[in-house]
Image (cartoon, rainbow, N blue to C red; front, side, top):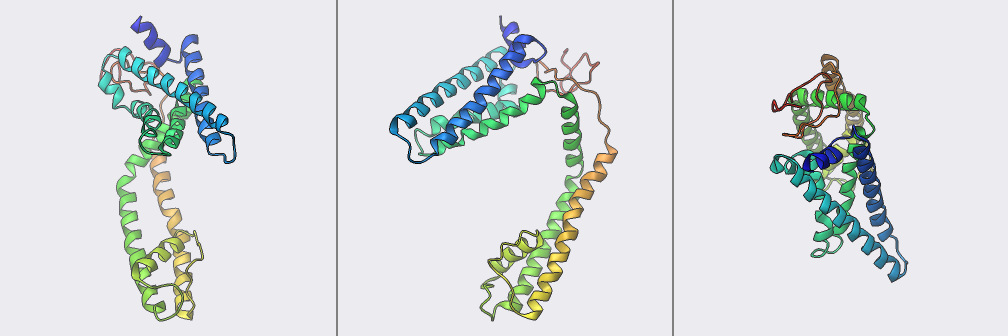
Length: 264
């Protein structure tokens, strides 16, 4: 029975498994819609009471599902510490946390992360491959991106300090170095709130330089990740889940899990 339930819950290749996952997705969307409706003002108390009852029904359904998942897997701790295991747990906690801290039950919107299962349910393996390729490129780029971000931090500190020196004597809003650094970040990232602006010719010239640098900086991380993407090649993978480590993304002809070596 555990094997049969496992196939239904963790595999999307069977009709029962697909029905289960689609039902789960509908429940996730429904629960998030309930939270959104609860935020509407001016409704009757019976309206909010009905929504609360529905929310708890869905919460206990998710709790039962989480417990069953722990029961059917070979290594419950592996599932509990996996990405989806953590997301499943976090999707349950806010409702109970709301009993202690008012308003925290709204955090059930984290359940939307569970919709990532839609890629497996609908057998969109090409998107899984592309997501895996993108993730590998990001991991391979982390050192370069780290150096880039460190350089940007140094740059905004220097630019912010210079702007403070130039504009501190004027009533332009640059009242401290931290606030000037905030302005440099907003300007360098081309956000441009406009709550602080230089008024002197020298300050405006420096602002123009920072704006131009901002456009150049945007292209740097994009180029780093793109370069890594060209070095990676995607492989044909399936949506099959390893019964031991619960990892996905195995090659279509794989007989053993490439993560833990368990027979598939």
